[in-house]
Image (cartoon, rainbow, N blue to C red; front, top):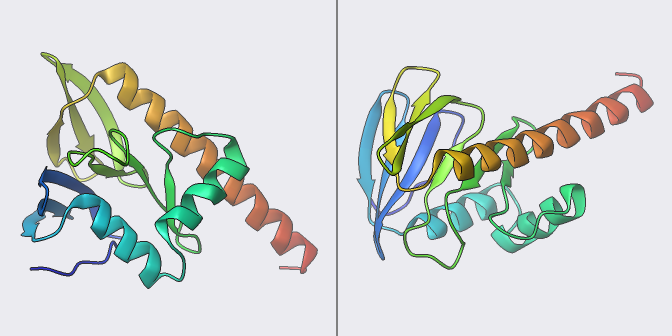
Length: 155
């Protein structure tokens, strides 16, 4: 598969190399002939923005400049966070919505999702937890803004 848009069932997009990623969706996984950042860019565009626009929005909302979590689609609170720099060809993306817990495995981190799917990530547990916290702050800000808007509109 060459084209893929992130959706509510996407758990993670794991970079394999410059032009190949593994997508985890529900209890399935499959290869996509695209790098993880290109999949993220295409998904942001599919939902009406750009990756750079989403990055700037996150920076404005929570003040983060590095390893910025991304709101892919705001009405469904689809938020993903990167495992490394956007410039890295080995940057992977993890869904905040489906994340359950993580734990150390050697120098790597095992990520467990709410459906018990587990994947190994090449980053420390501390760095991973920091990304979860950043993403949770972004999610909280997004929900607060929606709540204020709804109460203002009488919804």
